[in-house]
Image 1 (tube, rainbow, N blue to C red):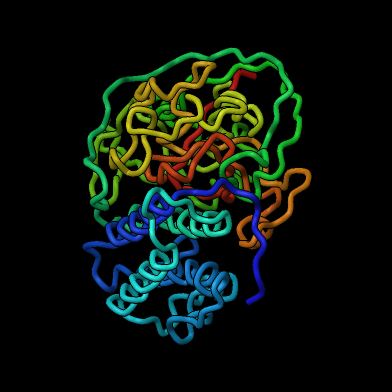
Image 2 (cartoon, rainbow, N blue to C red):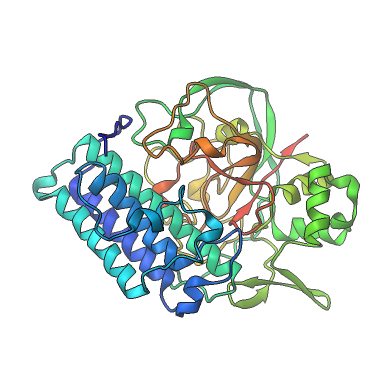
Length: 431
């Protein structure tokens, strides 16, 4: 492989990189634990991968970009590229591959993990890794982190038991109604070259004029969304865009995907359990069309991604400042095993008074996923560039299942408008 160029990044201590590599592997193992071989393959659906394939893919990605890409090593297993290269192996064919069994796949992942750690070398006396090693190790760990969140989605989609990564303690802190007023300003949207790490779709910072606006202090709650459902919101075409109404009819949607009515009581499926709908938790597993329809019903609108970023803290790395997230700031990293009430985590408030801009649920914006001025792909060229276009919308802020090291104020997630499997909700703006 030719030598790969990389964007500038802040050097990271070797022991921190080693800890990330070990931790990502441990989380992957925790997310597949307890599943039978047939569950690790699962049904052929357009919104999931066979989990057995996905384990091998994350190992391959580390190997491809670091061990092979930087060091020129030979592949650790035969047929690795023909099995696990996600841009060459069509999604629909991944169930048909002659995949190694689970034990063999885990040995492959462990061999890659150990090689990644060995190449970083001695961490004595806080030695810093090179800029190159810092960038590529973080890139491949963050890639595994994203797939680990996808494993959580898959377990929910297929009704598997909840992964043993959190204590399932829900914070009963109640609602947080009302808006905050945000002043008109010129905002620097996107990454600066001085940021410690950034993904390619954040490049580059550019000035955007943002008019004064009002935005909700918290995401839309289940109780607020239920009012729309019970007001026949899913039956009123006038509340939906043309594309949204076509989706609703085709899907036969009458309420969020995992909700069920039991007499006069609403319940929701959480993994393999049915639990009462918690009124003050954020509405979740709603797609962009559903969020748009709720806003039209409520006389509200979705924020643009520039408005969202301003409300979340502007130029700060996180809503609360530049310090990395802790358990006091946000519902991240799977620690709570699910969503919490929208009034929880006041320590994570932005300077404007918006809560949970990071964690709990990803938040849909009104912005299509398009490149910023000056965009150029980074070494993982397929991360963003193939997906730009009007049918994928930007989400911001991370969810309860997002690893806390891979989300910051400028992070841009993106999904098609019809996806309901992701841990996504929304907050609204005044019209």
